[in-house]
Image 1 (cartoon, rainbow, N blue to C red):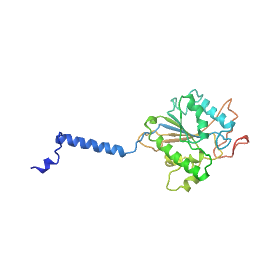
Image 2: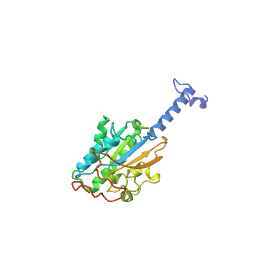
Image 3: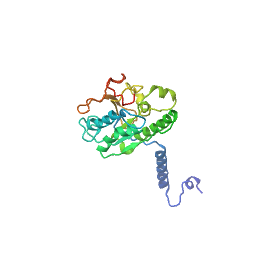
Length: 252
């Protein structure tokens, strides 16, 4: 018997068919263990509006949510430049504050808010921060892997310490815990290391023009500006103290 030929003998399959089937199996196996990459064209990242307490926005934060819808992020926004004339693929939130901020804009498009819900309840600060970290990690992975959002715009409304915070990153060396790290903004020049606690009125606009890479190709900070009826919303330059008209009814 010719042992060389017998090792390729499979009932019902000629040698060429067997080799083809084996090759396809290897390709399928490799695909199964290769992470899916489906990168958005743009991520619009912002902080929630001003808050009254651990659960809800104050009246100014509620006004900001309406202003975001009417000016930048809603279906009939007066300034649609951030969305580049295209409907957003998804709105993401992580806490009650962020959900309340983004809900008016999402509703105007008939879209749900994808919530990676973390609710404070009676949790201690350490447990709450750990849950926020896990939710942020999950959300960032989903944003960079979801085929439904590939090449489109995703709006993320987040808690500022998990957008970017040098101290939080230092406390968790060896782990990626902020969106600055998880969205690979730490590989882009000009991205602040920390989102200041005093700033509510900025967008981070992150572009991924190279769809084969999860490293952004462009980053821009855009300051929110509003006309009537939202002209009186508090505003201040990046990394400067809260404005003098910041209301006492909102948490500092």
